[in-house]
Length: 182
Image 1 (cartoon, rainbow, N blue to C red):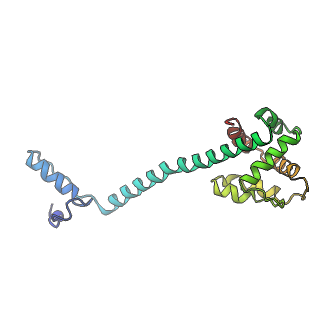
Image 2 (image 1 turned 30 degrees about the vertical axis):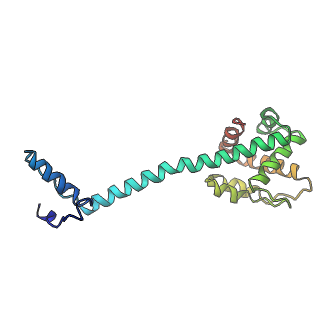
Image 3 (image 1 turned 180 degrees about the vertical axis):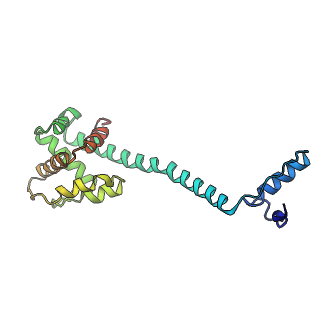
């Protein structure tokens, strides 16, 4: 316990002094086993674990807020274009959509800043922002599509391209997960 003798009144709450204080309490209570001094690496490891747990606890909240934002946008765009989920589902079966459903896609892409009004597709920025970097290769494969004056058709063609690039179906599942909450 010689390593603990430097624990003064100001240091009693530090991590290095806590075992000393508990050891004194145990000795006063008649227990004979004083605690060993924790190593600096053990304290660093505990600190890292605590920081990691805090970061992991915050991650779903960040994802949830992005999900909530996207859900709100989907609901607004669905109302503006008079579209329901059943109007959009044919997209996932590689079937054509109504003009309103295509305009719903344009509305959501514009609201999410994934499609500019001049027709530039910047979906990769949106994917990075919401933590869906795994879909970047799919978005990049479709970003250089032909410009189309009909922005609704352009948004639709871009999404169709991405769904075709998505061999594992992860993008489809992600999109359906959001759309089914509308």
